[in-house]
Length: 439
Image 1 (cartoon, helix red, strand yellow):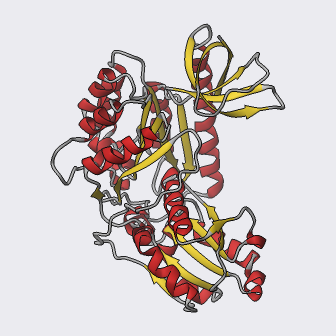
Image 2 (cartoon, helix red, strand yellow):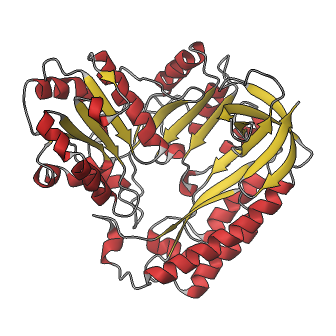
């Protein structure tokens, strides 16, 4: 490995993982490695994994198995992220050609682990127990998104929802000092980014270790940095969603008018079984705060159907919640058991076919709601940040402040660059996107 300095990195999962990969890439490049686009061209193959989805660990092992023949060519393999933390050294047993297994809390130790790998070690681990105090800050970050910069402000989770493996793979909650966050945000603005997204498993559970700023005050401070035009944050937990978050969105125009507030179920009994720490009424009170804002705030959510013991009437409560809230987007999932989670001891008696039926009913109803919601934008003019171009449809692809996809026509020979902003008049609406023309 002395002269092997190319790497391939594949990322699975959420925006947190995508940003973690930016940290890994930055560290590898600082150590003299060059990123390549194909596994065949790499000396080191890394898989940054996510354990949220069904059979996530099996998918990782399948991917590793697909490329194990490359091990005979002298290539090395590393498994990073949540599946790495969840499976630990069992990965070496199932895939002995893997040389490095590291959870997200250990990325600061990557230079040391890479040195050991280059020295010929074959079973290197960077794993932490749940009580780790290791932080997620790394010295080097390679920002690969051309129009949006991410900052992790809180890592880990202390909520222990019955279905979720995150507290066991990401460790306890630990927040980053607000001064450090703002310093990075200023560097991001100075480098030309105009949109920042603050990240955390429960981003609004942020507790400034310096005691200087609340989450809402941190939002305001980031939004007031010169050069920043949009600030987003995800994902919020209803239990820690406070009214001052809505107040600061109203007060600071650069804070995007969109809140992602996962509810998971419309039934208070199911929520109690899920250990979500709130009721339907508690959640709806926070929705009322959002809807009472001075400017319209788009609301999206996550929902799980078929949780153990969910009755048809309790599922119907979830459908009535859709009608009550009128979400602009819903991410729906069938319940599936996860390793080490409390729900494993519950009887998963709902057949998969019934879960699929419930999910389809939910998605069909939400599609009707979104169709009506999006049609209300026809005739409006909205500001759109460009994310790319669709040459087939001759449209520019972008997103509004409310996080709604907008595709628009552009009557100029040179396409607008990603990260630029344009006023767009909305002329058509679909359940998942808006269509318009640049003014």
